[in-house]
Amino acid sequence: MRKPVLSFLCLVVACSLGNTLDRQPNADYHARREALAKKAGGVVVLFAPLEAGDAEYGFRQDDNFYYLSGVTEPGVALLIAPAVEAKDDSPARLYTEILLLPPHNVRLEKFTGPKLGAENPDAPKITGFDHVEDMGKLPDEVSKVMASGRPVIYTDVASQGETSASAEPLTFLKRTNAFLFFQDVKPLLSALRTVKDGGEAALIRKAVDASVAAHVAAMKAVKPNVTEFEISALLQYEWGKRGCERAAYSPIVGSGHNSTVLHYSENSNAMKAGDVVVIDAAGEYSMYAADITRTLPVNGRFTARQREIYDIVLGAQEAAMAAFQSGKSLLFGDSDTSLNKVAKDYIKSHGKDLHGQPLDQYFIHGLGHYIGLNVHDAGDYKVPLGPGATFTIEPGIYIPEENIGVRIEDDYYVDADGKLIKLSAALPSKAADVEKAMAGK
Image 1 (cartoon, rainbow, N blue to C red):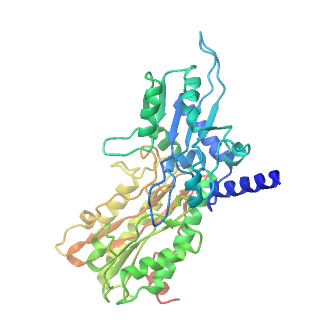
Image 2 (cartoon, rainbow, N blue to C red):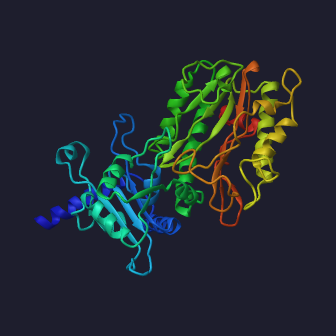
Image 3 (cartoon, rainbow, N blue to C red):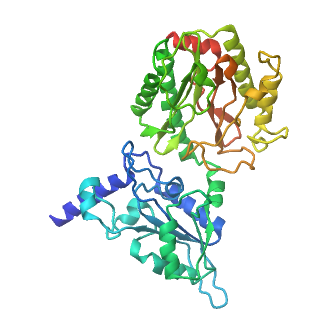
């Protein structure tokens, strides 16, 4: 009976490790670890956060840790080190990667389910790591890899005002080896995460598709006297039943004056005829985020002034899309290659406020940002947008004096040929098409 029981437990743990996520193949995470080791040229040690009391969604893995491991368990650690050649008195070392797992907490596992342990012979196969060890062996493993190089560890060093899951473990590690020095690994990871591989792009597309369906449902449900919160709840239901495990960020459903408040989050007002409502909401599918915004007329038809502002915002988005050049365009900056400048110049040259002034003063945020494991994903904004870049284009005009806020936000991907792909193209964005969708046509 022992073998079948052990096999069953291994299966349970494997399912637990992947949770219900649409996880990429182990080889993809392995390739990222090797790429980071090569880029760092030194030892990398990273810790996953401990489980916190998030009653709504439960534990969510740190973005960088998940990017490198695909492991969703709390309290684990990884060590990677590049290969080095023999030099003087230092021996050669092969590329090294180790996943370190905490000891079992039998009492806790009765509540949270079985956890993978280092004693499991299938642990390397399940996780895709070359080696899996008990967490208690970390100091010894660090000493081994440090024997072949500088006493510098690349890790999650917290900036001022930030927290780091690595802070306490690194303090302990420092006590075991006083000659260790720590250097921040986040800039290196940001550079790697700027370019999405095919598997990541596919997961982002699934998040976008589910979010588009949710927005279509919202378009049909927006009417006078419906509360903003009802629409927020509908959105979360719609993307949830399509596989999204959570919202990618707190949904924004702001009508009337609230449409001019960028990060309005109360979602408590009843929508009124004659107002517009800005709906900035999207789901997260298997850790990957979408980010979509539409602006709707509450009673189903834009007024002439609302339509004027709406068309200017849409024109700015389309101008940025038309100006895009793979390998040349930047999201930000003052140069002619900046998509932000293109959009802002368009808004400045189209339309006026009630005082005859240009409207660019009401475009009060940047044109876009990377999306990925985080809705504002890590990435290098100094690098031109090229193949693998996944980002938003989201111009907006917010005029509190007129109670008109308009934002149109879509998600984009640059394919291997340098073509700009609008991932959220299935969601209506032209004013006439929005009105038709709201009427159920």
